Image (cartoon, rainbow, N blue to C red):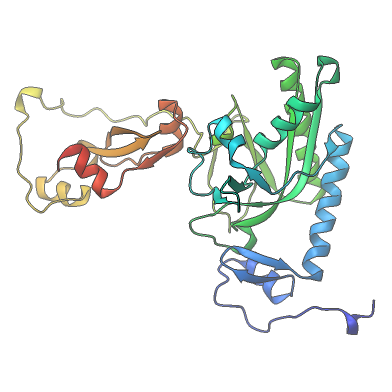
Length: 331
């Protein structure tokens, strides 16, 4: 097609909404256009780029022995109720009812659908191992979409699901996917790092995320310079820093109740009592699978909700709202 007939609507100026360079360039180059918050139209140049990436992914997934299928975007709520994730997945799951008043959702992931397919169609261990994958549009109702396509509500994702006869066989399938992802990222010319990650609501005993290293990234990782260990902050395991020897801690007998009128934050309390934040214990109220939980943490630390959820063995954990805190504590 002649360039004069092609459709590439460019911008001279950087749109005010674009914070990161990738978002700015895609808008200016006429690759994408925003429809609404977190949802974009792929214009011809952007779609060509998507297709090139898809081709690389397909080649490597097929090389690894995976079989491509395409599952529906709309999923029946009964499957999610059966798996137990209908109530626990969170507000990112867009739920609705059809004209027959049946629960349904827009799929943010497809574990329920693929498991339902396999239990109906795979009848013998001789049909395994089998690994299905798809490249499909997903929807997650992100609370704060940002950075263009990097954190959108609607997005294109490749997801794969393997079914094996044993844990050892499942590990081999996992390793095969790990190697395939490594080849994909290398072929795309990306500087990346595979890091240990939290399994989240998907579950499982271990997980890795392939992180592209970039100044505009929204996640942080930790890694050891003397070994191969690397993990995201939700999963990272660290030891407390060495503390220089100091005076003996205060005796329990010296504790006393102190009235702190109008003092609410850790900073205000430390200033009022002339102490440092690490000498305080703050109490946070969470709701874990519908149960109220009080969590005590040092004043200068923050709660990692992923680690808290894993420690409690809960499906979902979130901070309690003001009304629930007052109901639970009377304060």
